[in-house]
Image (cartoon, rainbow, N blue to C red):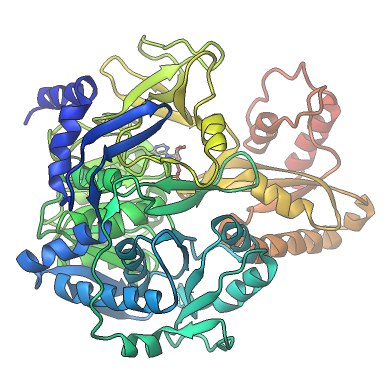
Length: 635
Ligand code: AMP
């Protein structure tokens, strides 16, 4: 196909969405065919493939057993414990049924929530697929989150069961999970009835009688279990996944079953150019949306092998990923710009040591892809580097190039063009007017209904869904991405950053409010602001500015450093290392407007050494001057 064909493909997706998506829906198996493609009678809510029944696990596993049962489905590779395990579709089918039987024996039923707090081990994928099989709603919480963050998410999801493991491992260092989980269960108000523990033998732990179950033991008891898939209505909730917003309370992004399955099947084929029997390697983590869509569900639904990698990109050396690409003949690889920047610091010759001919494209997402990084990896690999822009909320790319359909040329700095199904617009935030001209900066919004695969609502909070995402511009209901963007003369979009307080650290999305609330809870802190500042490696890092109740507590440099360490420890223990600010600056005052609103942009500008812009609304310009002086002096 040519680039022109993509335009026709796109146009049809928005001019005749019913016909378009009815065709895409043939990429998956339906138990009962759908009666209506798109029910958008209650905007902004939408039901895709109404009347149809299907099952994600059936589409990812069972349907491939007859035709490719001996093909590799899940390739688990860990450079942390130096092991590799390969499961064919038939073996995966067995393991998922065993896990499903174990869940059933623990009383898990359709519609129940199961929270998964696990490192990157095969049992995490079995658990997700087993939940899907039973119609239980999984909620995976990234292993890098600690007890408070976990407790908040448990209270929101109210799971009947939590699945966890003794420990993860990072850079060869064991990271115990059980103590964090036990603490979270002590803190939360809705503890689950039971905890299912997978013991990897990395970190000894005690099972709490009456609550904790041992997976290995139960696995033995259910080793021959036959557990059929439960046929679910297309709109049945498959999972919730927490993501950060502007408040301290994380949002449970809720996704359906049928729409998601279709969106993934279509995107693996049209966007990622992945074909059945080939291998997909996404370096993300199951705790993030990329892990859900493109480690677990997407590749398997498409009949591909998927690599689940536990470890760093640089251990045992910076060729570890390329070694996997060569050994498993990876055709589709998906990673994040930060990882490439980490590799860039290493010897490029490491890359050349491997035969990477199988690889067709390298897809990068999660944060802005800077041109030097894109150029470096494009030259080093000799393959197209495809930036793609999307969000936890959408589940699959909004802007990119559909590599399975056309050879559209990548443009440095741009993730590309709108994907089929997304009615992308740039609007003026104040007036809501659509900006049709080239090179006009606007808020990137999507006109409803959102295509299949996107979030249905905020878990248990329809009102928050509408208020947060659909009320950004006056007089019109459009979905806001909260990103600024421009479009050039050729229709390519460029993302310019968030319009809210969400920051992006190494491709991980963090809410500054959650970090602020944690630091504000420190007894020495009177007031705190957390902003994201530019970082050469991670894109952004969080930087905290704290005003002390008693400035004498930081009278000497030793005292100040000790206090900073103590505050950072609190963040580590409560939210997890992933949320830890690079520094906590102890300052005399925070810059505010006359109405008392914190001037985050000014703080950010000062921290990045930029001009602060118009400060006429500022209450106390002295605070900012002091801050500048303090930062300049390295305070
Ligand atoms: P998450 O929900 O964690 O995937 O984060 C989504 C946010 O990350 C988006 O709203 C953007 O701010 C940012 N983002 C994701 N992908 C890209 C990209 N390719 N280029 C620029 N920003 C991106």
